[in-house]
Image (cartoon, rainbow, N blue to C red):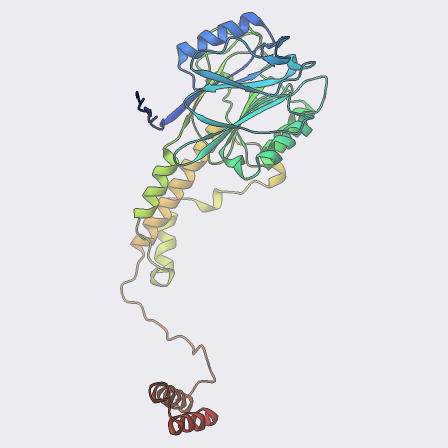
Length: 373
């Protein structure tokens, strides 16, 4: 009898993920170029709008060709409308779970949840068809469907509306409205200013948006300097997976370095702080005038907050007073007195004696003391 031993391949969790975002305009040539690009660039996940798809008469379903070896495709494309849909291509090695959307929108939205060792990430590819004019409804649907997973989510959207914040030359009224929806749900727009990117793609309206949740760490975001054969450029971006876990571990080992408030000389503290940071100049922007934060703006803001925190900690350390007069706290139970204390002591002692002896005389003594109390 021949027995075959099962072999298991342990896949080490990657420290980062490389993603690409593109609208293929339902073109076979664009699809073929993308297949080559995925392999050459070592892409882990491709988020595609308007993919090239065909109807399989034998199996009576829609299939997406030109999937690279070692990858799989996720979609809910409809027979009559698949040219205006969305799909996601991911490596086989990832444990991916499809995200189900309402039937009304499942052609336009494709989503997967990738389970990792310490966390999970949700990826959504979304196509907002211009003629449908349902961008707002579609984006809100995806946000509500993701729910608690929204902070760990990445949304690649062909939004088909202009807004300067994602690189367009102007901002339309609908584009501004969509920006407010994204901002209201604590999603950050990862798009960089085209002038800051390594290349500025020609012949595009810059209507592709990459929105990420608060707990998602974007390592880089750029336009790929490679022709896509489409009127949309390749967007390439990376996700760092280890920083959040490392930050958690660091927080566990940190000790308290700032003295308590009652051990700080307030006058000395304010003088020390005045020399490092001008608090009066830091005004808070009203929520009505707030704009969506890009990944770059968020990074600058976090650096400023970190510097301010360090300045406050240092000022507190230098202002620490060694001799602190501790004031006695008021009694928590003002009705308590020595007489009640003695009665409680006698009552407990009588109860212990009765518990050991279980005799009538001890029961009578305990009852008498208890009634006195």
